[in-house]
Length: 178
Image 1 (tube, rainbow, N blue to C red):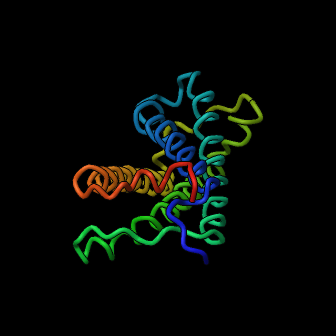
Image 2 (image 1 turned 90 degrees about the vertical axis):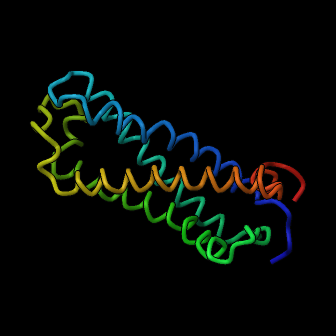
């Protein structure tokens, strides 16, 4: 592949769209849906938003993975710490894995709870009394927590590169001449 100084514009667009989507969908699950009782009539509407957002995120993540595999990328940027440099690719691929696990556990919850009928087909069927009866709900919560922690690590690392290491990392993940 040809040496480039920036990521492919499609990869850049998908990166920032995914970032915004995750920052919207993840807190809805943590801060709104989790504490809301399943008897609350608004929960169906919020579940529809959350589930549709999750499916959209998975679709975008698959597209992003394919684009990443077939396009040229700039060379890796060193932190000056060999262990951190070896850990960076693990965290980047970790995003793909965690989003896949989030979608799989969410789909499992939806299938077990019959959410397609109640949420998307508006069948009038009530939600289960408690989603915690499904083991996939614990997986969903754990993976969501891991994803949130990975996001924090990613943001801290990007800020370190940009403002401490001064290597213009943000420029690589923005639009412009490659």
